[in-house]
Length: 153
Image (tube, rainbow, N blue to C red; front, side, top):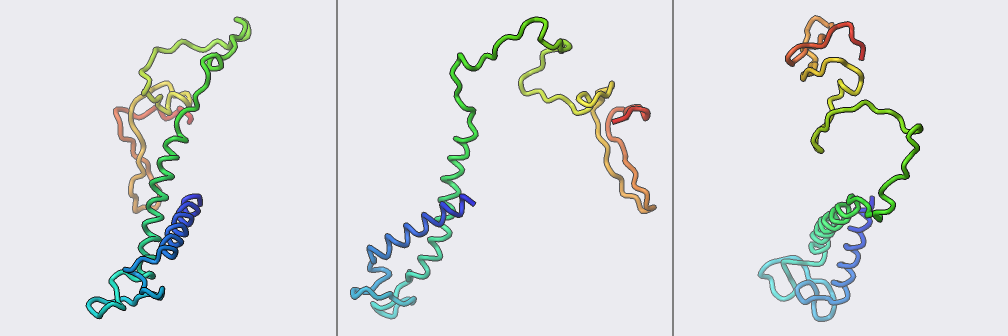
């Protein structure tokens, strides 16, 4: 919705400027609009006002997209917090929950879902719904070895 509002504002501003300036390519010296046409004389033009209004609508929407995408990029940046506020207050040793020690993974490492839901094996693989013409759908496991059948998800 904000894209349309910004595009509409740009569109109205552009139309107002053109109507105020009344360029000779679109308007006659008396202020009336020129008709669309090529090679018919001074009363015709290849860029009448109505054609400009249509093109300007597309251009203003494109400009609004570019402008708002730049603001979205800025809005998605992390908020700068003073260094004193970044560190939380330390809890007493007895109040801190004991977390199991895990090996340090790289910053871009994403944990597999199987480890988050409590599966013991972390074998890479996935299930795919096989095309079955018998009516009963079957899932086929693609991976090194399927998890044991008695594990619940």
